[in-house]
Image (cartoon, rainbow, N blue to C red):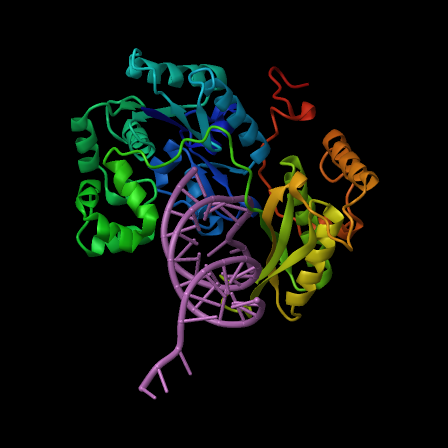
Length: 424
DNA sequence: TCTGGGGTCCTAGGACCC
DNA sequence: TCTGGGGTCCTAGGACCC
């Protein structure tokens, strides 16, 4: 059996933990650049039926009328709260697969002697007591069914956030209950195509011939189909695999027509991803750079282009990567457009000890590697970008994204600790 | 005027190589 | 009238997840 534990309205809940004055009140969290709504707590969802990913400026009046508190996203806080939850889960099973910032699978095999229902409640109660975060728990024979059990735990009356799918009757009842789009892995497009042939419930999906599923939904669909029938097909991976791609692409705080500012943002993003690359002790073979204009705009001319370049030798050296990325950017940049975003992507990622030089280009000598290591240590000690490539420039405020309503980083910055007591 | 970011997996076609 | 087979690399797009 596999348990799936998932935090309720995770971002909104994190914000509320530190704001008792907001308990029981509607709260939403906004995307980067405060562009749209990415999380809403139960109260906010009930109150206004706020569609997720709706542009903030379109629904601002609804938020204000209903006194909904909104926050810019504070990933430092969410990431750290997530670690606390995962640490607690580690006390419940030796095998935990962290699936996302707010979800994990627990291997519950070999715990047949336990009362799984009581076990589920213990997880829920311990996490709440230690972190203040509410979670739901679903336990079932496969990952896809555990996700479904988790959904039942939250959506059906009377389960109190814990649901155990431990019999064939319960599995069939769940499939009967679930709409096809409730299934993990079946998104908008597959729902449309399945509806078109008269499939609306999960139970109808598992009755489809496998050949149809395989042909129309590839091997991915086949795995879902089998998992829903109780046959495990998805791996359980407790040790996270090294990333195959590391990228970042953030909208600018304002539209940028000129190459100079875009170059600086590009260099900055490369510094960020190169740091992640070094932290996982890897090197990248390819660098991709892309630029886009605002595709929502009806008045602006549209343009987007990407370019991938191969590094002479796979590397994780910020300076080497910036220099190649810059060439790629020059290649695709065209004047006369208002750009909204530049993105970078490192691919062809290999462990750093596998990097091979060639006859004409030597691997970076030890002193260069030591320099980069010092670079990373300084930034850890004194904060992000304390030392950086000169290519980043000094006018970050002209392109960086906007976070007007960010909450304090309560758990990671001494200066932003929660204060309790009378002011003054 | 304002519309997110970071990922994975799969498929297919074109260019090119031998 | 007839026009290979096996492979890599790159790009692009579609689907999905949180």
